[in-house]
Amino acid sequence: MTARPLLLVTGFGPFPGVPDNPSGAVVSAIAGLSIKGVDAQVLETRWTVGDGLAERAAAARCVLMFGVAPIHRMRYERAALSGAAHRPDVAGRLPTTPPSRWRYSAFDVPQLVVAARAAGHTITLSHSPGQYICNAAYNAALSTNANTLFVHIPAPVGRSAISMDAVLSHAMWLMRTLPGAPLRGLRRT
Image: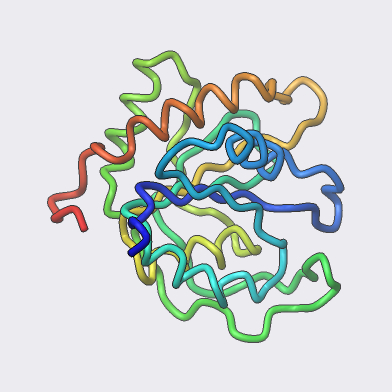
């Protein structure tokens, strides 16, 4: 019997406007470390991303997801939204079945922000992951595993760029922290 992975870590490949997705680079670096109990996967940036993701998320104790956004600081997403933007994916397709409901992380996300800041990471709290594929993927993972956190990292442009070393350091901190992180009054699965 294969052991249940402690942690599923995901990022995304390129998509229109972002030919080099830093979230995929971070997850590829994590995969290259071959950490026991960690399943690191770079997902295609397609509207159909949820098709297999929900099952993979259900098989993990917790899920750590990375995506990229036009922001200045890394941010933790509290919830996945219903609905989807009318924007094409990497294959040029538009969404056909957008998420139909909001879903919330079981992690005490505000407390995780406080802990990350205390550990020296510059993090903000977000209540909206947008309505592109990051949101669709987050919604799919949360549908089977509420012990999921989505982290948006800044797009690597101009002065808002954050070094890949800083993002990877933060990712490693989260990988050590999430398995024992506080939940919002819920039981750990």
